[in-house]
Image (cartoon, rainbow, N blue to C red; front, side, top):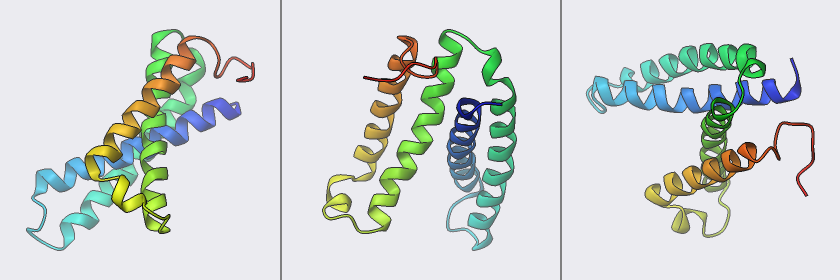
Length: 130
């Protein structure tokens, strides 16, 4: 395992945690019972850890478009959590600028940019970005 595979596994785990947790909460009906959020977090953690482990093991075996898709997927979760963290620690104007649609949009744009850089071979091939 390299630092790249560990980073891809961690990013994949974060993204999967967010998506699986949110999907579980929506499917079970938000606001129906107090335990729905706890169940959503539990499902997100379990599925996220599983997906992160699988991504860490198989990331070195991927190439081409599959690698860039994995990089974009992992980057989306990290970007989303970073923006949410800025709101959490009260970075000035972060709450006003990053409404939920903008939050999602910026995360997607960052993921696409990083994936395009990965396609060009600038990320993950041992060369530096400069």
